[in-house]
Amino acid sequence: MKKENIFKRMIKGFWHLSWWKKLLILAVIVAAAWAVKAYFFAAPPAPLFKTAEVKKGDIVDIVEASGPINPVNTTEVGALVSGEILKIYVDYNSQVKKGDLMAVIDQTQILASLAEAKARLSSAKESLSSAEVSYRLAKKNYERYSALYKKDYVSKVNLEEYELAFVNAKSNLNSAQAQVVQAQSNLETAEKDLSNTKIVSPIDGMVLTRKVSEGQTITAGFSTPELFVVAQDLTKMQIEAKVSEADIVKIQPGQTADFTLDGYMGETFHGTVRQVRTNYVDSSSS
Image (cartoon, rainbow, N blue to C red; front, side):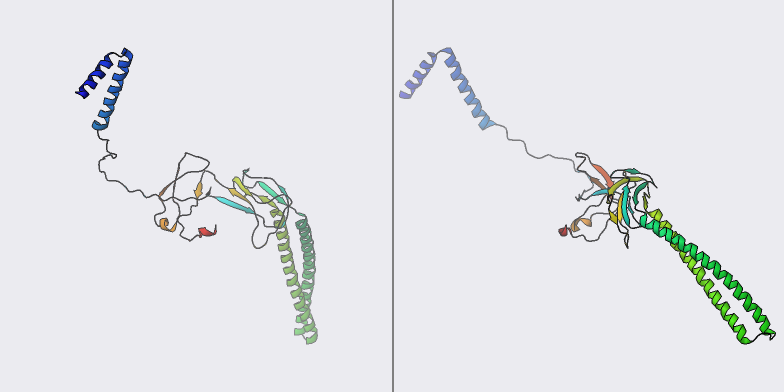
């Protein structure tokens, strides 16, 4: 009875409330009923998977590697003579044509060698002319005394003297001829060295690297000093990538390859595996 009286008093009190308080209480009751329904009677969540039709296709195995990108065709331009770099006519990214002058080496020493070679050749030719005259005279005397000896007009001793003179004259002639050949060779070498003081581009292309400066002295020895690197065609590039031992067996020439460049973010380029080199590279030392 007590609970019923309390409930009746609540009902009676509710009807004595103002209309907006009644509306607020009804809204709270409806919201509570909706929350209870949503909690206990909500539909189960959808499964987190999708179904698809089974199809036959290729299995793709991706091998990732990195490396520098370089032109396919590059040419090193070196110096064949020693000396000081007097003038440089090209720099990084310079466009050059085959035969264009790239640098000049000091010619002072080589010009002196060239002048000396010319003088030695001139002297050798004069010596050769004198040796030829002596040879012709010695030959003529020897032939004449040989004929006289056969007729017993001269002694054998006289004949042997002219024979010895003829042999010596012939030897001197051979020596003079050899000296002319050597002097001519030295002159050609000096002329070639003079020509080599002008460093020219062997191909059409772009200068990628300049390794010398004006005033620098270079020495041409067993190895040719490298002065410039020229790329022939920048539309053809290649990447030399280091691949792990576990992945190298998966790569074959002719396979397709996609790559990206730091300077072209968001772009993907396509290429082909041209060569697989199986030599071991110790990456721990780098």
